[in-house]
Length: 320
Image (cartoon, rainbow, N blue to C red):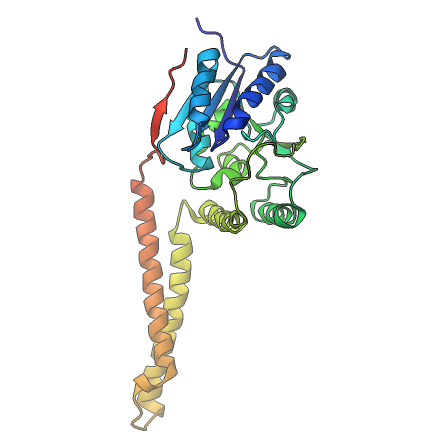
């Protein structure tokens, strides 16, 4: 009978061949000292360097290491989702593969989950070794906006190191670039006992960051999407129908006004199509109709939606 696994460590990576061996040694030291039974799940998100070959060597040396390789670069969210699906531990911890997250934080995160009754604990890199202008300030602005919109008061939504109870990661669906908002996704599923723990941020030792400045702009757009889906995702007609009705009522009012004015007051031969009110009415009624159609289509799609994977696994090492 297989021994139950205490902790699953999920690590998405892209072109991190230099970091994999020292990171693995670091994890083993941190968890073996605490007598945890654990597994390490590396998800290779379409690396073009020797990352997969390094992982192949590691899996041959250690029976509790698994590797999953995507056919191309699908993104961090899809990599995390694949790792969550494959995880077997009672608790799941995520780390970045660039050695900027310390595995020594894992035991304290697990203890906080157990003792505090939390569903997830998010790391907070209070002291960072990144560029102040290009990463720290935009990150603070991004986190402020995320707190305001989501109502979840975390200092660092996008911190790579987080700890979860297994049922959390098995329930949420991480896709697109929503890995930044996993605490929000969890809260929407009812896992709203969310804690935060200050963690150490390490300076990058190898390579360079895989994320550009555009990630903050994309992050804000994803935040708006998440807010909209959370508020109107179950009943899209509540949004589109409301605004569609408003536009149709205003457009119809302008149409009635034009008709009455032409019949009883405007005795000149001026055409209705020469009046700006005509185009306002036409535009509003067309937009209102389109909003209603969008609402109906949203309701139909919602009812016929089927779950599907958003990534393709090229290769997976068998578990020993």
